[in-house]
Image (cartoon, rainbow, N blue to C red; front, side):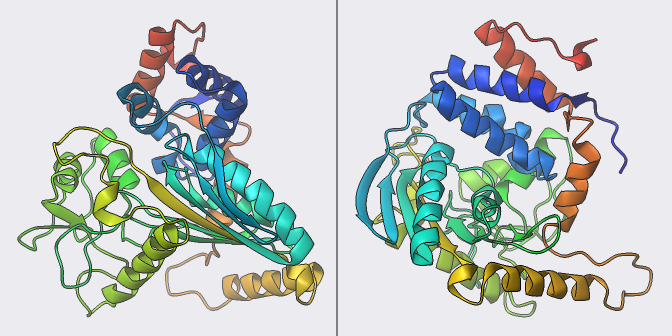
Length: 370
């Protein structure tokens, strides 16, 4: 892997983010959860949701008043196998962590469990929560709605969020099968990353009101906010490349995220009031945990899952291709490369780090400053 950006030691970055979150009012125990979720994104190479989002998505929203640093979790309903929570516009990562801890315990007792959260905020990479289950030998499934950005098939209005539908399955290998991806061709976070790095968004991922492709990343982000552009669902525009499939899965996530929790959906999640002022996002998330022991046993499940993954990777490769991957494998390779080096930080993230550090008067020094 070629990497020209400077690296920051994992512990140093973790300690900095924890202290920074605390500096803006997040309790230390909660700050540790939030920092770990963000850094896990970078460990997996999902940089659109890692340190790149630390300031603009979390710190700036806390300062703007659209994200509360203290998370008051209310359990609205609980049965032996289900939980419904209200996060009251606190840290989505904190509420999700509590939810998964509860569901894992319930699933180990009863075979499966499910939960939903309403009035939440961005909960980081969905794969973090699904992997909490797979690390315990369980199957993890989760999804979340988000700010509207996907247009339905044959439409141009951004109606649904990028709405990831995510699975983590334990295997007999060193890493789980973890499918963590949006139901759009590209997610908003990736476009934010392109914009911060000064890169264009590849043509065909975003459509304007007149049906033409947009590529200017900065312009796309503005257009998504003022609803003059929309992301294409998985498969693309129309039916020719089966974009209706991505549209359908996005709708499944939207319904489960809102209907199970009794929460809000679609145009109510813009983060902007009818008067054009910033407001709370009120997102919804859903989670399911399944214990393979309740079926034919964990060992059988892991062995079969591993055999399927290996068979896929060992199948005939297309001409010119050197390797076939299964979900979670690339992320594992990134972690092996970065674990002793640290998290790579580009110029935009460096600027954010310095700005937050100086604003809070924190005594941190980073090698990239030399």
